[in-house]
Image (cartoon, rainbow, N blue to C red; front, side, top):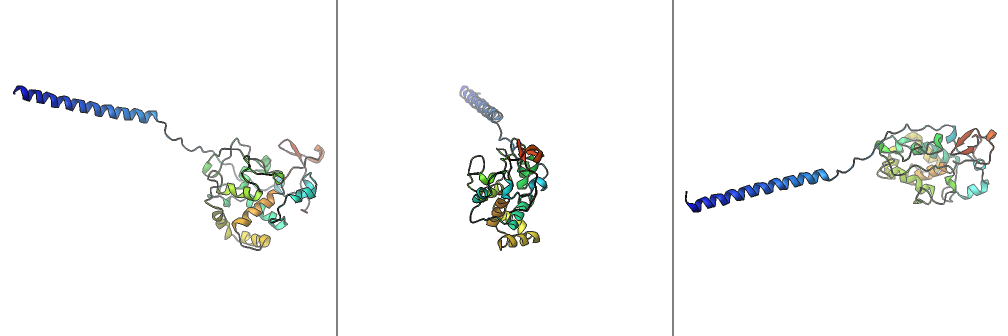
Amino acid sequence: MSYSKRIRSIVVLAIAIAAAGALNFAQSAESQNKAATPSAPAATTAKLSPVPVPGPLAQPRPPQQLGVPALQTLAEVPGDNPQTLQKIALGQKLFFDPRLSVDGTVACASCHNPDRAFTDGRPVSVGVHGRVGQRNAPTVLNAVYNKAQFWDGRAKTLEDQAGFPITNPSEMGQPSLDAAVAKIAAIPDYEQQFQTAFGQPPNSLNLVRAIAAYERTLGLDISQTYSQAPHTACGYLVRPLGGALA
């Protein structure tokens, strides 16, 4: 082999070795980068508690039982959603019905359990598919007197508040209020109760109005003595329930 051919062979071999080395280096660097880059964390999930059933603590209270002058309580009721017995009964049924959620596992009462002072007793609440939210559930007791709802005050009325959890992906998970209504609209009991309470078939506006009407009846009477109030919640004394709504 001539000298020039030997030189060309050596150069070609050197180029091939350099290319192979560069390729190995690039692959190694890519592998290290993948190892160093944290993967997206998996969604946090937790076990759901059974949906509560409405017991004595869940029963609506008349304004006279809230420890505040009845006229003051009634003044908090908006003019476009007056309280009626039929509307409150419908709202209570909806409040405890998991069929409003996308998978039928979560109701309003899941995060607002009467036996836990209308909270869920968790650091953060758990919704459909076991999804864990970012905040704990505030009580709805005495929410009738709130000037804004939720911890951040993003809802100004109980009607506004009632709709948010239904469409929150980490709570009840429905794509819209209309989707929630569609799940219950064909149920004969609901068809009849909406007609009785509102004179209309089920719809999203009256859905949140009914839930809000029920929530306005939930409160603590802190004016009673211990002997008159054997139940306690949130450190307050709760008057025994009973009596017709006024």
